[in-house]
Amino acid sequence: MSLDARNISQNRRIAPKKRGGAERIGDILLQNGALDPGDLFKALALQRYEDLRLGEMLLGLQATKEHAVADALGEQAALPVVDLVRDPPSRDLAQVYSPVEGIKQGFVIWKKLNNTLVVAISDPSQRDQTRAALADISTNIVFVLSTQNAILRYYQTTFQKELSEAANTRCPEPFSIRGWHGLKPKIWGGILFAVLVAAAALAPQLLVAALLGWILVALIGNSFLKLVTLIAFLRHPKGREPDVRAKKLPKISIMVPLLRESDILDRLVDRMSTLVYPKELLEICIVYEADDTETKDHLAARRLPYWMRAIEVPASHLQTKPRALNYALDFCRGDVIGIYDAEDAPEPDQLYRVVETFENAAENVACVQCRLDYYNSKTNWLSRCFTIEYAILFRVILPGLQRLGLPIPLGGTSVFFRRDHLEKLGRWDAHNVTEDADLGMRLHRQGMRCICAPATTYEEANFRILPWVRQRSRWLKGFLQTWITHLRSPVALYQQLGGFGFVVFHILFLGTFTSFAATPLVLPLWAFSMGYELPLYSAVSPTFINILVVAFLATEALLLVLGFVALRQREDRTLFAALPLMLFYWPIGSFAAYKALYELFVKPVYWDKTCHGINDREHQSEIERLTAPSSAV
Image (cartoon, rainbow, N blue to C red):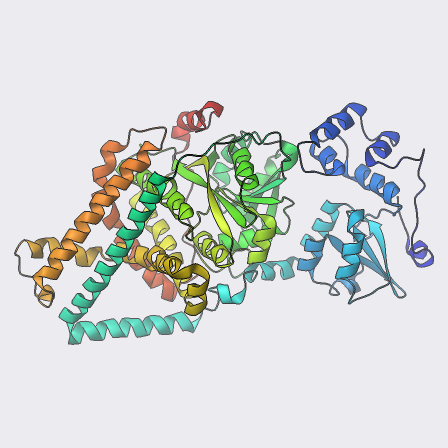
């Protein structure tokens, strides 16, 4: 149906003619010849288990066309249908309402005729909500219908610059590191460097003693946290896993950000295709940068499955993963929002487990974190150690933090959010290079919680030294950014996290950085403790050094125990022999720590990208084994 300007001005409400007294959208589609009766029966049956309106269900099943659903809704609601491409909204109305809010509310101000605003919506049931949103602009409103895709396309093409800039600042300023730019970090970095140089020149022995004292505090703190999480993990019984297939399943949107990764795109599509969640409830969004011509061209040459689509992120002075996610979220339709990395291979039933976790959780649970593991763990010693480290983190420490009610630093992939909670948090901080861990702190501070789900996603372990150092340096820089951001209001942070949570916050972020940065000062202690003369350590009492050495040995022993417990939770238990290699693995992080410290002050938003898909072809059989339906544990 169509509507011209004269009709709108003369008729506040133009009712399309109904045929046969049909009232339900399914009946109208049948009468219009736009739907097969068998497809309608199937959609109605699925509605008992899936949380979708009938029109969305039919489109998800590819049983009809979007314009046919719009026409049927128009007949049902007595509203005309407009084509936003053939008859686009008036340009002079473009700045009347925020595009961010327009997308959120799901409408477009289409025309203004005399004193009447004509507003295009995709859902007739949203008329009262839309009137309320536009009450300050006009109380004289009439409605027309358009499709949801047309409304989103209009905003994406017309307000590209505004939405791009909004993606940079969606996180509230008090919880963002975006003020840490320009001369400010360089000045602070210069002050810190000058203080250290002066101390090293005037009192080097006292400086070393002070640093060793801080290292001992951090060492004890890290060990204490690991110990209490281990105890919490071991004392918590494994709960039952109820069947969720008989419940109402939500629509899930999964964003997969890519940057110069066209070579892995085809394998990504294949891996996403193994997910067994109903495709009418699944939306995989491949998010790529506008200047990534390599990925853009590959996408143009390949036809994606109907439940996958690409979202182009406009160019900006800032190019980070969280910024891309902020932008793309506007164009996602799911009630649950998930993140995968390009090389991820999730277990086929993972989304069912995520839904089950949400449905059995309290209302304040905003996030579900799945376990991360590696499919190329046996490539070399580095990949083995990386796998052990992730097993400790995702199979022991994070579940332990959850069971203690403590803040959880989220992983950047296989993490799922209730969309309404994510919006309340202000999405991701586009300027934080470890946006996932930061978001975990923000949601805990706002009274929300995260739960670890018994589902695994397999990734490619970084098995090369230099890329490992670059990746780890970004993580550590982000940890420092998160520490700086949240510590700007220490009293509020203490009140929101509680005393124990406040201490854990410092251990997780500053303590983790310290544990990696400490290596150059700790290693010489072995020689000093065995009687070798080291003048720099002369200001430190032998008793203190012995305490530090014992603390270090105790920490390493605890890490071996954690590794043993964590590896017992994996299906493949062949990595126990690699546990002693962890003694040589942790010191490599010192290079990453000092690179992170330098970049914190000189290049705070620089994103040292990790290349994906380096040797996943060699492990395709292992990926297929791990992600076979029967392997889910």
